[in-house]
Length: 210
Image 1 (spheres, rainbow, N blue to C red):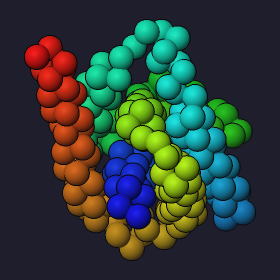
Image 2: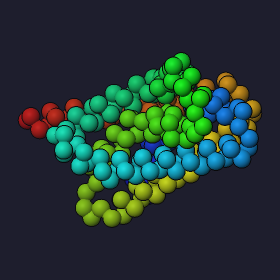
Image 3: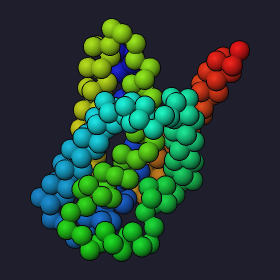
Image 4: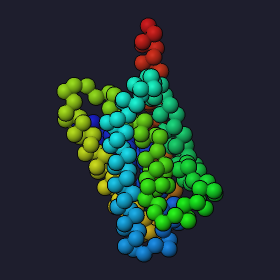
């Protein structure tokens, strides 16, 4: 249960679906309610698939390229902390990898559920590296931890669906200032997660050298 809560909280902080609300509203302002629900559903499904694949396959990708877990943790920690700083400063679009050119491109697409919503706005490098590193830390017997981890990914994906499906209502009742306030709190937690990853990796390297 402890591992489940930790991974659920960490994933929710790094993915930050609340911070995606303003962007989702902007991209779907001309959509019908049914179309918004469809995009919300497929976005959450795509996020789930990306995260599950990263969780189970990421380890072997690291081994293929000869990347150590400490290197991944440091790189992931930097990305996660950088993402947190973006949220803390209220720079959602820049933090989510959306610039003017990309914005113009996605406005001409019929389906935005996979890109840019699922990736890179939600399931980006930060969440992927988080899951790969978490999988590496699982020690045998690992069955319960793997099940709880998969369940955490399912719950996060469900939360993403519910939040995006209610995005227009949240934007209306919370307002821009409310969304910014919540995202800044999440951003602070995200920074802490990223720094903790970096500290843990540096300590591991020092321990190995000794």
